[in-house]
Image (cartoon, rainbow, N blue to C red):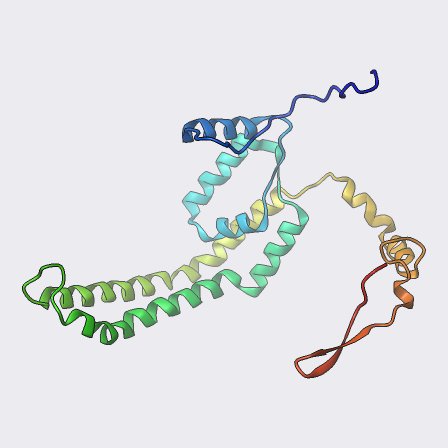
Amino acid sequence: MTRGQPPAYEKLAQFFLPLTGVHANDLAAEGADLLQAPRTLVYVDTSFLMWMTRIGTKSRSELIAWLTDWCGARLAVPAWSAHEYYRHLKDRTILEELATHLTGMRNIAEHSFDFLYPFLDEPLGGASDNTRQLVRTREVLSSLGGLTEMLSGCSEQFHANAREVTMFANAHALRESELFDYFDNLDAVASARYEGRIPPGYKDRKKKPLKVEVEGEMAEEGRNRE
């Protein structure tokens, strides 16, 4: 190879965001080619695992089958994604978010009519009187209350969904990676950094914590690394 000549890398699939108008079908086809390229690795992040937990069993099964058919062994769930997902399961993040949203919906269904009534006193949209719009408002709010009660049952399915997604994450966890080779000497490297023999923890052991005021009380805060 002569100086200045680019290395002969194997051709990689590339995906570029269009700068001009592109038909959606053409963009989808380009993305499909990228997904099927042999050297394209597909990593599933935590937000995707969370979304998979929210959807139903049938939709999730179709998604997993599609990912398996299109990506095969190139599909992987990184360790940090699985770890964050496990933390969200322990914290009941999805159920807490759902409960908060349903509380807001329930408050609207139960307490909105009295607030809205003065605005409905005048016939709207060319109506001759306000009877129909008052009845319609009560029907909508009643339907919203019913929807809230129906969605409350989602918590019963949550654990089954989480189990399926956890099995998916475990099945696609990275089994072979150079990352695991670093664990053998991780303690020694961490100790060397802390003692100041190598960066990025240079001289950290000799640094004294800063005193900072947090909400009226003094607390300690670490110094920036050199």
